Amino acid sequence: MENIETRIVFAEEGIRAAASTLASGGVVGLPTETVYGLGGDALSPVACAKIFEVKERPLSDPLIVHIPEIGWLDRLAVVSDAARRLAEKFWPGPLTLVLPRREIVPDLVTAGQETVAIRRSGHPLFREVLKAFGKPVAAPSANRFGRISPTCAGHVAAELGGRIPLILDGGSCVHGIESTIALVDAAGIHILRHGPVTGEDLAGFGPVHGAVAGISAPGGLLSHYAPRTPLRIGAAIPEANFGLLAWASDGKGFPVVEFLSRKQDLREAASNLYGAMRRLDESGLDGIIAEPLPETGLGAAIMERLRKASVR
Image 1 (cartoon, rainbow, N blue to C red):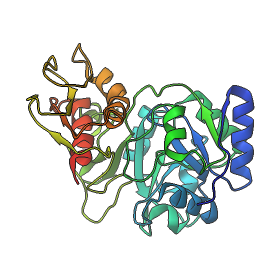
Image 2 (image 1 turned 45 degrees about the vertical axis):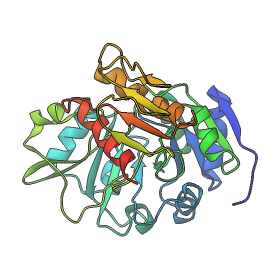
Image 3 (image 1 turned 135 degrees about the horizontal axis):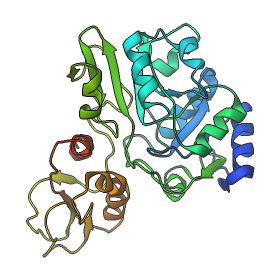
C-alpha cells in the first residue's frame, strides 16, 4: 500500500478534518465508546472498498453502519416493532441491530447478504463527526484484520499509521470491547456477538438465543481479536517465558503479568482487555496464558473474544 502521512487530531479541528475527509471519499480513525473505528462513507462502495483494503479485511466480513440520527434507520432497513423497541432503549449505545436491508445499502457493506448491521454510537466526538458529515458511516475496528482491536488513538497509529490520513483522538474507549450484535425475529432475540449490552440486559425484551444459521455478523469469523503471540486459555500455571492475562490469580511465577481487574470487576476487565493483550503481545514472550472468567454478564463477551484470540 501507498505510505501516507498519518495525523492525530483533536477536538473541533479534528471533527472538521474528519468530516471533510469522509466527504472527499477518504477513511479516518474515529473514537467510539466501544473501540476505535475505521470510518468511511457507508453509501459509497468506493469508500467502503478502501476500508477493506486498509484493514486487509476479507470481503465476506460485513461492515457495521453507524447512523447520525434515528431517522436514517428506516431509510436503511426494514424495522420491526421489536427491533425498534431495542433501538429506543439502547441507542445511542453499544448495541448493533441486524435488520433486513433496503436497496440504498451497497452490497459491499453487507457482504452480499439481505441484512445490514446498524448502530447509533453514544461517543460525543463520533456523533459530532457524523452530524457534520450528514450521512451514515461504515466503521469496523481500526486495526488490521484479525488483530487486537484499538482502544486509544496510539493503538490505531500502531496498526494503521502510514495507511490512513487522519486519526481523531477521543481518549480511551469506555467499554473497551466491540458492540453487542443482535438479530430480532419471531423467535426472539439472537445474540450474534456478545458485548456491553448483555444477554441479561436483553432478556427483558424477549427470549434470548444464540446465532442464526445463514447470517454472517461483523467480526463473526472463527479467528479474530488475536495477538501475534500464541494465546491459550487455561489455569495460571507458570511456563518459561509465558505471560499471564490474569483474572483470579496473583500471577506469581510469570515474567510478565497483566491484571484485567484486581477487584474482579467485569466492566473494568472488559475496558482493560485489549490494552492488556496488546502489552503482553509486545513483551517478547513465547506465549500468553489467559485465565478464564465467569461467563455471566460481560464475562460472556470477554470469553468470546479470548476464544477467538486463541484460535491459530
